[in-house]
Image (cartoon, rainbow, N blue to C red):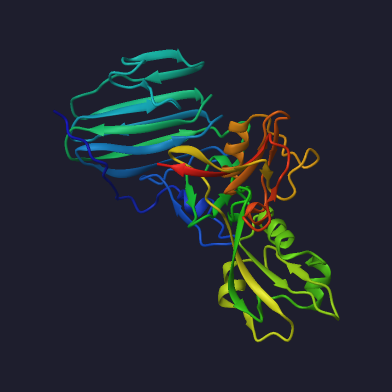
Length: 375
């Protein structure tokens, strides 16, 4: 049985430019990390060619990611002292060319619309196997399976990428921490869409603001007169995890300030301005998790009652009790009201549904319910 593990040691001193060097990850609001394939072979928009020495150890080595629209890509493995098989895989994971694949012997065949050439299986030294693709109509992966430890050479060339999207061809992966996601051209960015619809805010400090905020920035980039909730919703929807909020006073309106330079971790955690004259506060914004991996169940709180504010005019638009229950929970609410004969759904501020604020003595078709996730 052939045991596999990934291992590749680069030996040549002049190598193709690495994916992370060719197009490094941008930090944005957080620190981005960059990873690229084992061999650091990057097929770029312009034509290129080269070679590099590799030690093949018993197992499978990823040689290159071939991007969509790459033209006349040819990769050869030359002179390994033990048997190796070069193979190319499609987007679905199927082996398109190489030993035991769709094109499994010497020749050219049309596979998924692409003309793919394979030189055939070569088992005896000096071994040489080549795969060539006229144009990649889907992203491809080229790998080598080695049946013993040996040294060999990868020889490669391509005629460019037509058409070319520079952000899609680097064969590198950028990753961020926490709720940050990587956005090409920007870097790490806070989660923009909040599936639950509920944004939680945590005070990071009082009488403080993120670095860089002054009268000019408030006038040019700030928003005046917003409530805290409105400020948080605006900041989060624009992809920011941190926001500075100035509470209103008799002499001035509230101020909400966020932006690429005002909401970074450095500005709001490292370079934060303390002991401000006005009532500034820095908040961290997170999307409330309201997913349920089990079953949603409801408890009847009362009948002939409803949450304060529930009416035909404020109906949430969900026309079945099951949908109303589901959407209430997944938008972060514990209670909902449902009127059976009119198919009216309402959920919102949970305080409107508590024992102090809910409305009793209303139409008998109204009911007030608590929704919970049952594992």
